[in-house]
Length: 380
Image 1 (tube, rainbow, N blue to C red):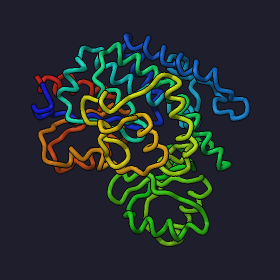
Image 2: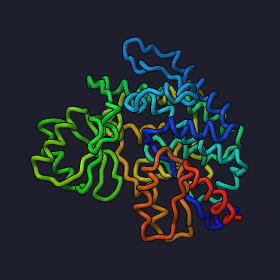
Image 3: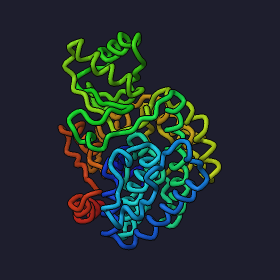
């Protein structure tokens, strides 16, 4: 099947997911033939960690023993630690690419899947997993490339956290507050019921007290803002005093992504990627991959990794522009969501309420059953 045959699938990956270790554990226990890949990926992370002096930063104060956390749940660190950038970057990627690879290992030909896919994207860092899928590699090539990406994500998580150090910020998340109504104070927060112009007006009025950036438009009237924790806390109070009836929820993030706070990461992470042997050109992509920065087609990129990093580190993003084909007249019938978490799947569903397109959560047993019993047979 070719792209001219009106592909019916759209694929997406998330960029956050507090319970990514639980998803990794489910994959590891449910699909034994994934165990060697997951173990090899964790070894790669530890290999990179051995080259980083953490004595002063303490980023990995509770270790990197994800293999033990998977096998012995009682040893798993708290959600605050797992949500920190140096941990979440490599292991969120591992959970989502493992979910994708596990589908292929169950007998789905990657060429068949991509031939039936219109285009693909990823929320925030999830776009990297989308890029790997869009390269239409053999299963063996995909696993080998994923290990290079695993190494890249270790350093990206570190560089992002080092970026916050440049501003004197050493945020730690309170794992007990992450699931509370307002969440644990952090470097990012979602604001609901505030359109862009009024939000910009509030940010401008607050600028005498601190810097806050618009980072990600989730839905019209729903934004993620980013900044230093103390500035976000101040902005929250500022909105309350200004009688804005918006809903506030901290995002479990120890970095302020999609804004200028991560410039240091942009100066260092591309070199890290080259050092671990990762280089991708737009010509390597077999189908469109919609980038974080306003839905650009990454097939037009000469240096995909740099462009993706620039978009994630320093540029604001708009989700509806990343899923724009779903909002236009087309023949697509399914969105395959490879997580982690359910947040981005729900976000896309919010845009598709008036359509017949179904979002299939491939991270949960029911979604997996629908994928194999309903979605894939419909493509034959």
